[in-house]
Length: 119
Length: 107
Image (cartoon, rainbow over all chains, first blue to last red; front, side, top):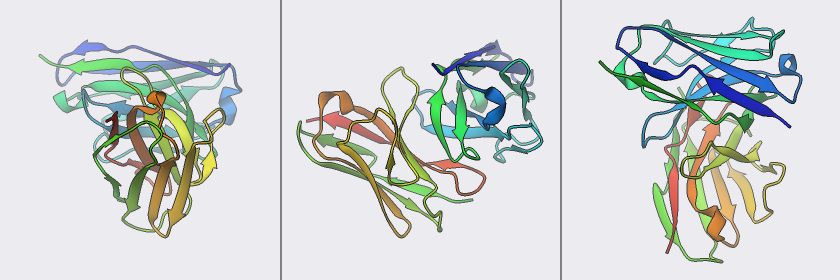
């Protein structure tokens, strides 16, 4: 059974950093693109980052480019999101998702971890 | 960036009714369109990928179609468990973009 379990969320002050983790199991992690998608409270879904199978290619929207870094450890079947210079608008539930093909769609999602940026 | 304009924003329908939700892409995205259902307090669930392919385990009353740059999700006979928020996603080019969502309620 495919499982994605996020961790690392919490309350953080503006301007500070936080690192999210996603532990994957039930599939060969190294064979799949992975992504982070977030959802602000009562708002819609927003794509945050995608990483290729080897980690050599990463993609970000302008809203987080230069502040967020997606990475992976295939030996540990783990995905990460390093978030720096956090802003109040980064407050959201962050989901880890498994991409199919080159992340053309997301068939599996984690349960999400809540990040709250507030002083 | 490719914009995905989803409509309607909200929809109230009766049981057994046919429901259609649409997403209009701002440019050609081929078949790189997927649909997701999200129930309150839950993670999104994949319904349709490749614009028209039904995801594993999804009831056959769900279907997807494409006409040019307009994509549609159809629920042939609305059931209670179909209540939730629906999103489309384009993955043709970065940045991947979601539609604004359609909140589906029972009349």
